[in-house]
Image (cartoon, rainbow, N blue to C red; front, top):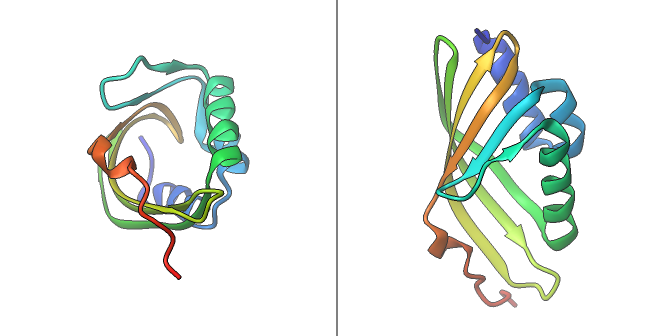
Length: 125
């Protein structure tokens, strides 16, 4: 079961955009991650590969935990996310991450969001 402090450490790492650095620190080797109804990614390396791919396509300019709750081995985090694409267009999303922890590591994470939020908005000039 994670402590509130451990979850706050995780949130802080995400908000510092330390995406590839925090995965080995907070995720179990056998972890799974799932976007909405998509097929789950299995294993920490699959999560690293997914993040690497995402970082090659977008630049995150906002990662803010709006709120979070810890209930035993379960954590829910409400994220406010802003991304910029190479053409300057932006994506703004709200997402709920629901996590299951074993000790101080995430073993399962599921992201819930409206896919319509992934449609880029033209660059603001």
